[in-house]
Image (tube, rainbow, N blue to C red; front, side):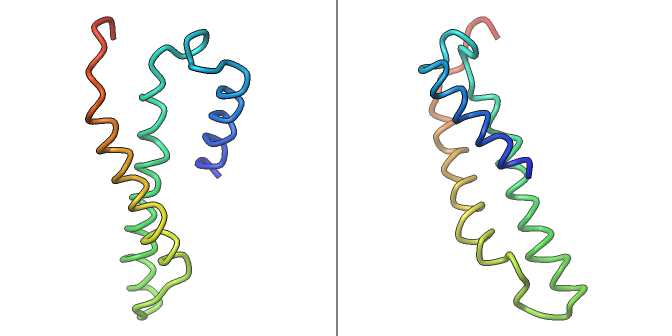
Length: 88
């Protein structure tokens, strides 16, 4: 749900304030929360649920492995290429 909320905020900002200059001059700080949430889902779906169900496959693991992990890794690589702001 948190990821959905962030996506909706992102869509609103993108259409209402294109470029982010008026509302958020440096929106990179919004990304870590859903990305960390996605990495946390790997811990839950890939480790905790496997232990509880005594199974190698759990519901949600394919979405996490094929969606959240690659997206989070891509975000961290892209965010690492952005130079730090002088005023923040």
